[in-house]
Amino acid sequence: MFRMWGKLMKNNHLLRDTVISNGDYSLSRTQMVLQALEEICYQFDLGKPIWLDSTIKEFQRHDKARFNQDCFIEHIDFDFLEIQVIEE
Image (cartoon, rainbow, N blue to C red; front, side, top):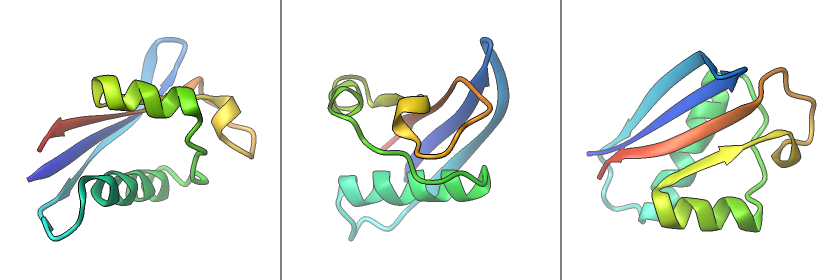
């Protein structure tokens, strides 16, 4: 089962978190990641963030990525959204 953890952080404090699960292995890993990110953003009522080159490299290296204000079009009232793959 593929699981991704999404966290909203502000001043080193966890504001909200959620875990998204997906057992549909007909999807590629990239599709599962993007689908989980979309669900996290839906639950947190956020617009989808933009994947910057630095974000992609961080995710490829650590299975973890942080989306800060530079990655969002609208203003955000938290420091960053962090996603992390916790199970594959």
